[in-house]
Length: 287
Image (cartoon, rainbow, N blue to C red; front, side, top):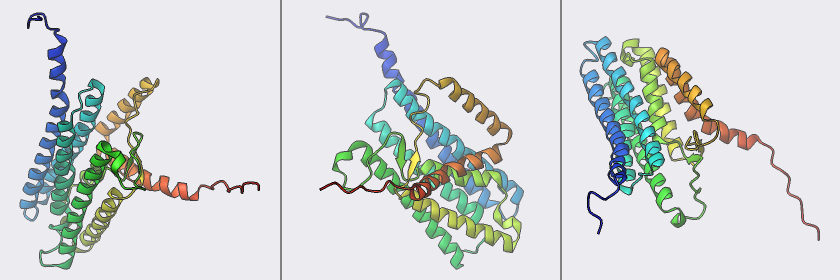
């Protein structure tokens, strides 16, 4: 019989690998928690110290950006080490609800809605409603993704099948990333821009929130990026990542906004181009 000393050492290492993806997911949760705390703290001083509030709002936006990085890494690490587990998948979804659902809502509410409109106004109530619907659409998007991943055969007929190269509907992390990048680009609370401009900017933000919610529950295709790094051109991918990383370090407020806006809009652009693309004419079968 095999004793403990005779057991292969790699078995213990294999068990330890399961902790790594969970650690990244836990870091994702931590960033979401910090984003909510910073948003609350910024709202507390938004009227007395707008410059100080802008620092807290920027911290919250950066925390959401780091959470996207951790969320990307946990899935890739799990696939690379073959340590994906069912509990890890559920833990990741719950983390996404907090970090990419509740955290950006708290940030946008404090930065661009509650700081602009009085609580009794109709615009304030509309903003709260749209934020709630964004959260509901994000939660539904995550539930649909989990269902398609685990039980694709029992879905209703006509539901798009899960494709490893594409997501069905806008994922919630890029939606939160776009809102966070906007705040990172202009962290000063909207109330500091004056009555007229602040209400205009706040209205545009509410339109954006509604569009993001619709895109999340839509059936538009979005590139997943899961196949990146699996081919023979890994060197080029490393160079691209290094270049983008340096640009983010030097010009984060511009680069992050461009990247997030480009990802959110590319699904719509693909859909429009597919409608404009001429389709081959059907040829009637000969009798």
